[in-house]
Every structure is written in structure tokens, then in C-alpha cells.
Image (cartoon, rainbow, N blue to C red; front, side):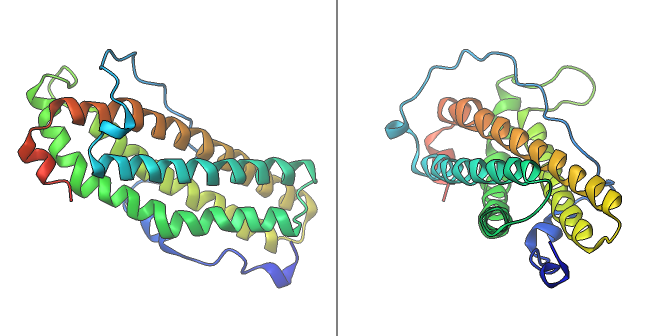
Length: 216
């Protein structure tokens, strides 16, 4: 990536989203452990509520973009951190998709679905034990923040590395971008799995008709 390409990753909503928790320092994240096995009865996609169907479809789109992003990162590393047109385009597509779709997707979950589901989980006893009660919703919202922070780190490492003239410093920075990018891919995949196979099923089993009416 030469100096003419320094602005190929411009600032966008993902940077603002990463500032959602200003007091938390941006740091590399490790994919969280999966939930304990669940015993919820599976529900066919066609029987899911339309709002949940839309979220699942959006997850499918994100999964395809994630595959392209992961392939681009691996190809970039194999190419000794040299960008080509295909790698650059796949990386850009991920950041643009995150800006234009994933931030809004997470906001929908947090503002519409999560508050209702959190109440139902608390009522049904599906929460932690101890002085401070928490549910799976707390974990999901925390992951949203960590994902935004990690995406911003990848973005910033790419921009920084492209401006460095020292080869060793450039390599170290690009390696950090790669490691953080792979962590983003793994964490988002696990996050999607948890929502599609646990959280959304809980909503289908626990919501009343009045609850479903609020999902607009």
C-alpha cells in the first residue's frame, strides 16, 4: 500500500460506534467461550417471527461478507502484506458493509429485541446467580461493543501501517491488523451462532403476542 492509497479506509460510522464506550480502552479481544448446551426446541425458519427472520437473513449476508474478509486477510498475509486489487476490494467491502449494515443491525437488536427479551429472561429465571443479576443480553451487548472496538483497531492498524516507512514497523503493524481481523471473524461467527440458535429461539418460546406486536 503506497502513499496514494493512504485514504482507502476513510473514517465512517464504525469509528463512532467504537466510541460507544469511551472509557473502555481499545484492546485485542479473544473469542468468548460458547454458551453451555441449550435444550430449547428447534423452530423451523419459516415459523419464526418476521422480525427475527429479517435478523437471521441479515446474519446470512454478514456471514458471506465475513468469508470474503477472512479470505482477503489470509491472501494478504500469504502475499507478504502486499495489497492487490482483489485484496483491497474485499477489505473495503467489509468495512463498508459494517458501516452501512452491521451498526444498524446491532442498534435494532439493542433497541427493539433485547429490552423485551431481557425482561422475559429475568422473569423465567434465565439469569446469573449472585448479587448482580445478568442475562445473555448483557453478554450480547458487550460483544457488540467489543466487535466495534476490534473492527476499529483493524481499520486503524491498516491505515497506520500504510503510512509507515520502516519495513519492520510496517510488518509488525500489519501483523497486528491481521490478528485482530481474524479475531473479529471468529467472534462475529460465534455471536451469530448464539443469536440464531439460542437467543432468537428464547424469544420465540418466551414472548407473548403483545411482545411480538412490539417487534416492528
